[in-house]
Image 1 (cartoon, helix red, strand yellow):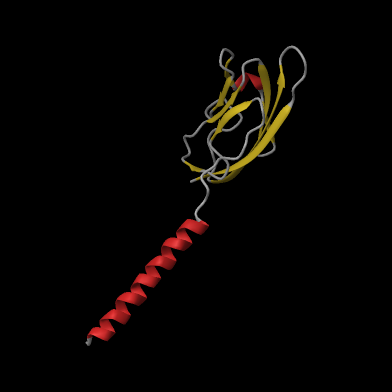
Image 2 (image 1 turned 30 degrees about the vertical axis):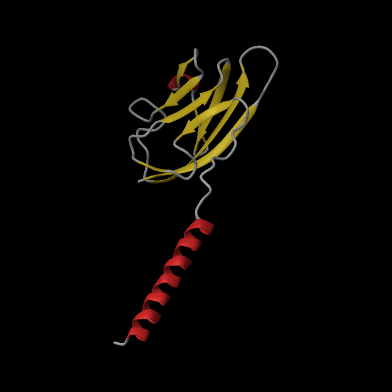
Amino acid sequence: MTTTRYRLTFTALGIALAVVVAGAVIFAPSGSKPTLPDALESYSPEDGATVLRQTQLVIDLDPGYVIALEIDGFEIPAEEIDVVEANGRFTWTPGPGQSFEDWAPGFHTVDVSWQRATGLPQPGSLRWTFRVQ
């Protein structure tokens, strides 16, 4: 190969690398999380997440709220939901004696709605989907 051919090859490789880097910067996700409703601090698994079958649902609200939880269109009785009232954390895990014995593989839709337990009403709701492997 001649020096001209080496120069053309390395120039083409350099341009290809620049295009790949520019594409990664342009098409990469921004990394910012969507804004949550006022009373909701966090929830898991997150929308669109892929999780293992042992996962539990966690809904973190400001203290002083009660929730209604629905999974795949089935309402979960309030007595199955573990509540830590001091910090507003609600958890639910499938298992023996629960509405669901375990998570079936595939997509699951969660609907949660909340309301202040006392004082002025401040209702809210959120729907999200996740996938179990």
